[in-house]
Amino acid sequence: MKNSIFLFPFFILLISCNHSKTDYKSSALDAYNDSVSKGWKLEKLNNLKPVEVKNDFLTIVTLQSPAVLDIKNENDYYDSVMKAKKINVQDERSLIKLFDEIEKTKIGPIVKKDIVKFGNLKNNQAIVYVDDIYNDCFERGYWIALSNDNGKNWEQYYTGLTVNKNYYFKSNSKIPLWKNSNTLQVEAAEVKTISERILPSKSEEFAAVRDSLAIQFDLSKITLDSDNDGLTNIVEEKMLLNSNNSDTDGDGIIDSKDRNPRFKSIKTAKSILYEALMEKYIFENNVDYQIDLSKLPKKRNYPQKYTNSISIFVTDDINVKGLEFDDETLVVMTSKEYKAYKQKYPFSFAKKNFSKMFLCDNEKNVYHIKTSSCMSGGTYLIKKNDKGWEVSFRFGYII
Image (cartoon, rainbow, N blue to C red; front, top):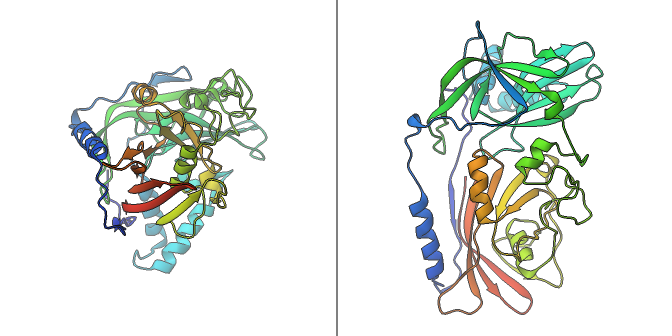
């Protein structure tokens, strides 16, 4: 993969806010940290075989005269436009204007830079493209947009596949996108990771295992929504939902509108605490604050793009499973379910890591909670009191 002349800057900010003279040591937290450290495995990625993908909505065929394989990333698109327009990377004003233009340049509902392939068949139009809303940090998934009225109206469908895990779709694919009225096809290569991502600046690198492939999508299965709840069977299966029941948890909210579709949202003292740590509420001071369970603060509103995202939340605490999060959908599962889930879906939704409450040594109602997500993490000191919870941010990082 070629090096890019345009680099997104990354900064790692370490934050420490310890206002207390008390250390609040927790042997339980120390044991947890040790177990996490021992669980990390350094793997030789160049020896890894691609993870086998099993599904019934695609067919793989071999081509005789394939398009040339040239694995590109998102920065390559910016590079090519910058070179064509002769924009200096040091010219900040021109760069901002260019990025704004790129985001506004669309075919149908899709930003042009995200499109792999576009094609027509009579009144039908299709776009194979990439998007990150259903994928983990720094990863993007393959999507299909369909229109049956020459592009006036569109529907968008997640394929369940992640870019470069296992397949790389070729934007220079020479075969027609429409094989027939029910099948889309795009040239591809099966790839594997040969070097891992290292933040802040090194991207993953990939190499072809098999080239000369065409991926054929069965549209009747890609678009199938057996229970008519607004989520396709592919999405529901990946969310551990019942594709034959529009309301999996039986709470009266259909799965596509339910922010916690696997469990009924039940308010408990613990669930409110974890919702606060996920920044559901607005506090005057986000470093140290009091959660009054009798009078919760105003909820935070997030931009529309983030309200479509899905994250995994793992907990074995029955008092936390009923989280209610207005601006993001949570797939709540137990640690046992998550272990089995990662075997089936090694490339999945982003995971919110929130530890259980670790009791501090020689204390009755004082705890530590550790958090981490894609770009940030931290440790909180939690004190239970008559009103609810007292939260103090102790240490964290932001990338």
